Image 1 (tube, rainbow, N blue to C red):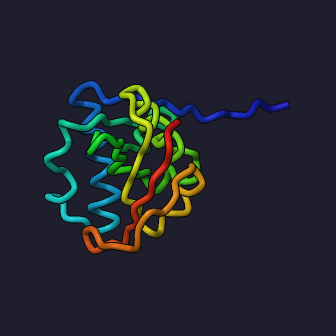
Image 2 (tube, rainbow, N blue to C red):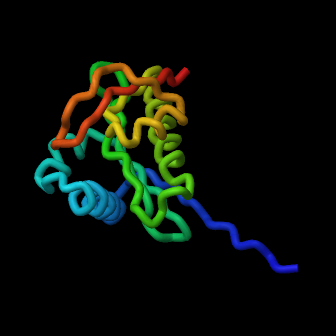
Length: 149
């Protein structure tokens, strides 16, 4: 009988520059190269005020996201997974890590701006649409919210 190889997911809170650079590379690959977001819009003035997470799949950087506090609510942003790692529960791991940070900060509600093509994913992890469709960087989005308690 052959053994089954199990992929290893690793979740890290970004603590140093090398980790943050890996997160930026993932974001550049997904948002800038794949979706055409201008690089100057992708890395913004909120980077230092945010807590970032990095998810690796068998040691290779696979997904990332950040969370910051806006008006007493956790705002989850820049959530993305590299194309070759989609369908491996990486997005779910990113969301769980960001929500854990928000709860540690005493926040009871999370919000995000979801690309409409990804809204179904966010619904599956407990978010509800809270707005009409609006445009960000020429991509249709909706605001979504979730109670963290």
